[in-house]
Image (tube, rainbow, N blue to C red; front, side, top):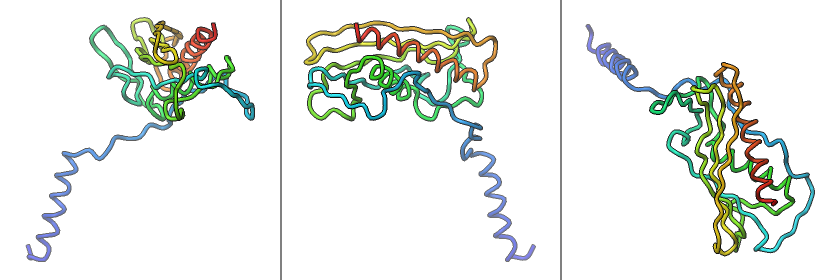
Length: 199
């Protein structure tokens, strides 16, 4: 083989070998999922509150299986899979925090802030853990479990409460039906949280 052809051929073979070993990213899903709040504040409505009367809603913590944009399927007590082609537009903890904020603001009339908005004292703070946000294959349901923790202004008292909602999937574990079921379950939890905070 002439020398002038040998080097390009070797380089091409090297690239083909490398591409067989390295993945440059998986195939993107055909669409992305998000959460829509059933209740949202009225556009243009102004609200005023003293520092102590504001409510800051923090992004909840989450276990490792939820620290992804994919939707987990709990198959049994020891194994987790993920719904094919199902992916959130951003981390579910952030989507859930925004849904809670919109729902509480719409149903309570309170001035609701997130952790990036308060300038001085955050008033009351709602923290917590998003414990479940996926599919329970054992029951065929979409499940949302939120362990809330309300810290009073000044941190003098802490109140905890657990919220849970389930939606039957009817045996269909596909991206759009699961996303819709999780949205319904998340809205139920958000309404319960708003009622709790307003009591």
